[in-house]
Each structure stands twice: as C-alpha cells, then as structure tokens.
Length: 363
Image 1 (cartoon, rainbow, N blue to C red):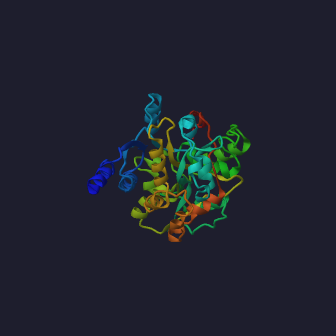
Image 2 (cartoon, one colour):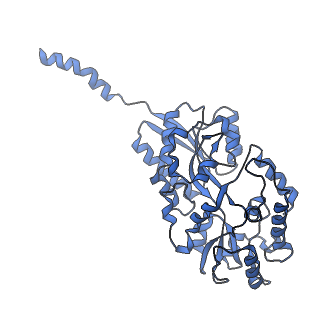
C-alpha cells in the first residue's frame, strides 16, 4: 500500500521530467564572406548544442545588407539579433535594446565600445575594430620607421615610380582619404558632429591626396588600373604601398610572392579614424532573453578567437588580440594603431553626407 502511494506521488514528477522545454527560435542577420559565414555556422552549432531549447535562424544577406535590414524594420519584422557597424548604428538606435549591463567593458577596446554606443547606452557588443594600414612591398623599399611622415612617403615614391610601377594605391571615395585627413588635422566632421570638410586642414589633405595621382603620378588612375584591382596590382608587384585593412591580409598572405609587411600610415595632427562592428538585439524581439544569450555567446573569448584566426578581423576583445601580437609581417601594427585611433563620428545622415561629398570632391 505504501509503495503504491509513493508511486502515485512520483508520477507527476516523472511526467514533468519527460516534458521538454519548448524550443525558442531567434532570427539573426549578418553579411560576410564564405569564410565568415562558415565561422558563424560553427558558432551557431556550438550554441545550439549547449542550449537545446534555442534554435538560431541565420539569415545571410551578402549584398545590400542595410537596405534589406531597413525594410525589415519598416515592416515591423526586425531580426532578433543584428550584426551592424558604427556607421549605421544611429539609424537604428531607437529600435535597439540597451545591452550595457551585459557587457564587461574592460574586455573591449574603448573605440569599439564608443562606436557601438549611443546616448550613453551600449547598443551593440563589439566583434572587431577596423583600421587602415599600409601593406609594403619590401622588395621595392626598406621598411619605414613607425614615426615616418608623408614627406618620407613622397621621398620613397620618387625612387620607386616608373612607367610600369606606381608607389601607392588610390581610390576615389572619401573613406580612403581619411588617413590623410587625420594626418593634416582635418576630417569630415568633429566629435560634436560639426562638418569640418571645408576647413583649411581638410583642404590641404584632399589636395595632397589628389596630387599623388595628378601632380606626381605616384598613384595609378582608373585607366592604369584597368580591369585589374589595386589589390591585384600590389600582389603582382606593381605597387610599393597598398592602403587597406585587416580583411586583405589572408589574400595577400596567400598570393604575394615577395617579401612584405604592414606599417602604420604616418601619424599626424589627429588620431586616425577607426570603425567597429558587432551584435545588437532588437527591442521588438519576442525572445529577447534568448537573443541576448546568443549575443553574449557570439562575443565571448572562444568565439572571438574563431573569427580572429581567419586573419580577416582585428578583434575588439583585448584578451583575443594577443593572437596578432607577433612579428610575422609586423602583424602587431594592427594593434598598435588602435592606440592612435578614435572612432568615426557619425550621425543619422552620415551616409547621405558622405555620398554627396564623394560627388562634390571629384576625387
């Protein structure tokens, strides 16, 4: 009788233990190359294994990302988790969850946190920090000193430029002028978002940049680049310097057959600008707790190492950055330049402003 009584008491508990928790599905949007999406899928698998009650629906948007994201917000169907960057953060700030209490700020570089914050709130957990450096063909020129100047660059260019070879890359959009603007103390706008592109310092920078192509002929124009790319020209040994970011490191490592390294762009009057990207959560998410949990997983040390080992990014996490702290091709420079960087100041109309400037400046 007692056994039967105990069994009756246990039945509800046995039934409860057999009932699985309902599975929550969260949507997650991101752009990215095949390599990046491979890492994302690996992280999602790890996350779902450790959290069987959460399923992640990964929506890869390789092109026109922000246009499509805008439509998702406009139709009131935003993804739960959103990969975005500081340039577009102000556009979505009112629709993003405040993640400040979930972020260990001491784990991340300050410019990365600043770039994904708005009105004192951290709206995105940083993944990477992007800065421009110069890739150097060491078979054409000795390795410059880190304290070199733009005059030093001109002196080198005079000795390496001929009818078949150019000194430095040249692209006709404002983004690539930013290191020159910083060197002369100019910029598109200041920290208070006042436009400074018409300042004397900015005008000096833009003139110097244009002179590289039109006056000195140290940089190739579109006709000299032709159907190739500037990256390809560097890989083929036709450029001594190639201005780009960490994302070009794997391709140059694989393809370049000469001695090369990376060096900081000459430091000048103002800190060089950097950008950052990371993960945000929509305020309208119906599975907010699960979405935040996934963002924390994406941003942890192990996941950060996955991304960093591809050589595509400079990690925003300080404890992961040591992977780059070596002398292979002077890779440590990607970390060194962070100390002399500040995040690009942007507002909601930043994209429209730069689009107009790209036309008006006629680079």
